[in-house]
Length: 300
Image 1 (cartoon, rainbow, N blue to C red):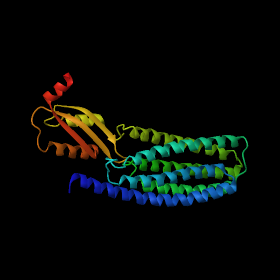
Image 2: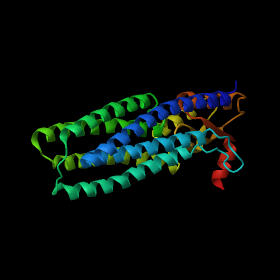
Image 3: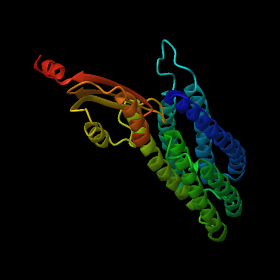
Image 4: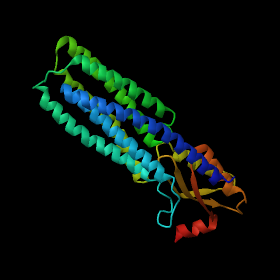
């Protein structure tokens, strides 16, 4: 089996594994959103409605990730010669922007209610939040293994882990409200949720924007790649080194290598294999140049 075919099979298996985890996560969170919205409307609890709106945004994000991962499996065409893998990056960017817009509305509502606190049932809030801890905790665990390999899965994992902590905060506030009738605490918890969402979404926005602009992925050390190429026998110099993300899981590299003599027949396959093994580069394009050719081009 060729290196490309092996990578494609591995990628397909990876996508199938992700999709199973995503489908389970979507089902769990849809059920919880319905429960949380119902009790939030019935009780008038802003913290429950805020958390439900956040979880609904997460569900929409997970659905978009599934769609993007399916598009990423489509074969390249004459129009999209790299395929549609970049849609996974665009989805991460859209999710981050959507969440940041949503929290602005939540923060405004919480501020309006702060000086006009409404009576809410603390025990009910605590029970619903306890269900949220379980649902979000289980979902985060499903994404734990793949969150280091995929930007979208890292975003989903961080969101669900943060949601579990937020639900814990809502749970504690529900208990406190039940015993103290400090109804203003409901708005305070909503604002805390807003801060948690902003912190997590800001990092996702920064990383997805970087990849959208063909920036070097954070997992890639460009200096180490340069050192590795320059330490290769038969290579005397490098230039025009570019590394960018083809999707949230696939990375491409192009480079011009200066060689003083004849190029070894297996040098291209050797370098491609090493770049994939050591630096997780999935698509490599290498151009060899003679030393005198490079010198001439620089003079011109």
